Amino acid sequence: MYTQAQLAQHHMTELHNQASNYRLAKKTRPERELRERIGWTLVEVGLRLASPAPAPL
Image (cartoon, rainbow, N blue to C red):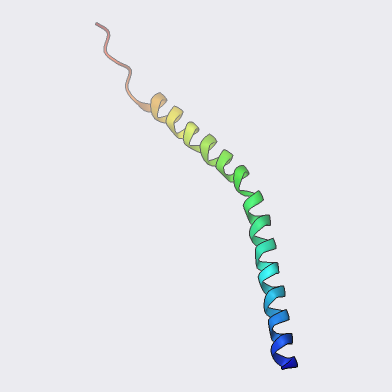
């Protein structure tokens, strides 16, 4: 019985560590989203600069 309780304790500790790691990883996500938005904005600007100018009327 003691062995099962000890295994359960270790399992709960591992789950707690995983949850902490997930929370830490989730906090870094907004910075990546900002980088992605800036990157796609630069791609859009580059495509506009590379496209031919419209013909004058």
